[in-house]
Amino acid sequence: MALLVLIELSFCVIGDSDRHVWLRDSYGPVPAELSDKGVSWGGLVHDRMSATLPVLGLCLSGVFLVGYNWGVLGARLRRFHAARLLSAAFSAFACLPGFWFVVMVAIYSYFHWQRPGFANDVVVEEGPDLLSWWNACILALPAMAAAVGWQIRAVSGVLERELSRPYVRGLFASGYSDEDIFYSNVFRRSLPSLLALSDRTIPALTGSLIFEYAFRYPGMGSLLVESVLLQNYGGIIASSLWMMGWVSIFVLIKDCTVRFLKPDWTS
Amino acid sequence: MTNRRQSKVTRTTRSFLARLWQMRRVLLLIIPYLILFGWLFSGGSRMDVRPGEIYAVPGNPAWESPDKEHWFGTTGNGADLFELSRLAMASSVSVAVVSVSLGIGLALLVTMLFVFDGGKKRFEMLNAASRAGFLMPSMAVLVIFTGGSGGSLVMAISGLIFVIAFHLCPVLTAWFDEGEGGFDVLASYALGLTRREIVMNRILPKVLRRLIGVFAVLVPVVVLVEMALSFMGLTGDRLSCGAMIAYGQVLIIEAPWMAIYPGILASLVVMVLSLLGWRVSAALRTGNIPGIF
Image (cartoon, chains in turn cyan, orange):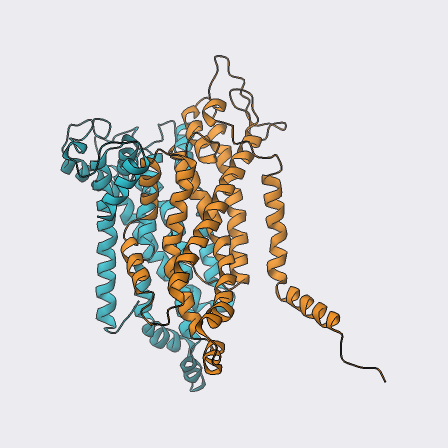
């Protein structure tokens, strides 16, 4: 509902369009600019989703594997401010404009590998399609950089807050080893809080899929941008709903897991 | 025997100097900000420059690759790309500063509407709205809003203001709730101060102090967002590094520097702003702000 209000507000109230979201005529078949194969909306979403899922898969793997592991390591080595050091590389990389990075990769591959660099230039027809994975990696890198940096600092922050509680000093005074205190007590106690962080970066990650447009990658992010530029409500609604559905599933999984671990949990 | 009691002027001066000493880290950080902003805005503002015109390729292009005279090379019309990139960054930073300031102001205004209510569920409506809005990526909202409304700078700034305010409201509510639990607030209640006095004199100053850190952290992020929107052509025909890269990528083969160098300058400026933002945030103990974009 909020999405429809946003579209109506942007295109009809503020913009100069006279096609209201509630009119059936405002929606039509897939325009040729979005797909030249003559597919239906379902087919288009399926094609675009299949292209986007590897990008999101790589992003999520990076955020969860690197973010959580390095965050725990940062808290473990807190005396050396390891969380800041470990997240510095990702935070620095996040300062590059994502769209510029993907354009740079395209230029580099054109001049140094003598092949067109953008994602829609070469299609692999035979053998393993490593090129599509390469393209997905190029898009996943700028999308996940900021998220990983944030996740490392957040995970480390949660653990460091737990480490500053009085019971930790008590355990230390009664002769527990550092490892025992950290992994068996502090880490275990802060597990629900750590899991609660898992969905905080998902909307930003999903939003950064719009860089697909810069790399001419035929995914859901580029579908959104192309639909907005073409003023096509069908494409806007399909891509936005897909993004919202993706975030909702993650939030649901996170909530269920945290409630299972700690039934009295409040965010 | 002299009177040891200090005069009012001496006491005021001493307390003022002590306050300055407490704020020394933040004050030192103002110097690099002034240097950066001074350099960016030293050439003045030229909002009439259109990237479509300066990136137009004439029949006999006069572009030059980067050399000692033109660090970033020149465009087809012979314009210095370094100077244009600096102007573009000044424009992006201005947009970010305005958007973030107004976004923070709007978030504070909305939150303040609920703060004076003493009930425990006073922020419930705001937090529920925030939880629902969390599901829609902010970048997608901005693309739809700016694209649908015609793609102008005013609309981009308005969209940024609303998105920032929307996502900052729950952060501010959490800080106000946190402030309510302080010992000084409990003591103020015990002494019989009114809720208005407590909020205005005890809780609000702590929140305001942290907002400076939020501003410093958000500005580089919004610069990146503004450049991404202008890359997609959603902020009007206006000079911005995003638009310069978008026009420059068409000339990859003939003049690759037109897409490469504006991005390098943009990355450097954003990196410096981010570093300063983290230092300001650390000095004011703002805490980890959730990612908006």
